[in-house]
Image (cartoon, rainbow, N blue to C red; front, side, top):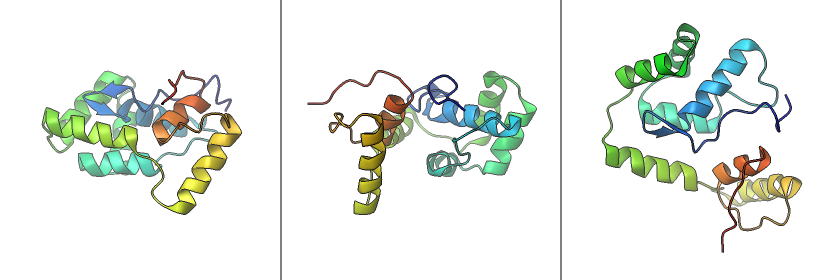
Length: 143
C-alpha cells in the first residue's frame, strides 16, 4: 500500500463525536479486503477507542462487515458504545490527539519515525500529527 495515495482518514476526523473512528473503519475495511499493507488493525490506538467505547474488535469488525457505508457503522456504534457526554468525548478526543510517546524507548522510536519522514519537524510531539505528516497532510508547525 502506498502511504501517500491510499491511506485511511486522519485520526483527527470525527464520526459520531469520536476522533479516530473514521480511521478505524478505514483500516478495518482494508483488512477485510486484504489491502491493509503496512497498516495494522486493531492497533493500540484502535484498542484505546474500543476500550473507551466498551466494544471489542470482534464486534467492530462484524459491524463493518455488515454495513458497507459509514452511516450504518456509525448507527451501530451509537447503539452499542458506552454512552458518553459531549464533555467526555471532547476530553477523550483532546487526550487522543495530544498523546505522544510515554516512555524513553517510545520517544526514541517516535524520533526515528519522525526523522525518516521529516527530520526538521522536531516540533511534533503527538502520534496524530506524525501520522498526518507521514500521510502527506499539512501539519502546522508548533512554536
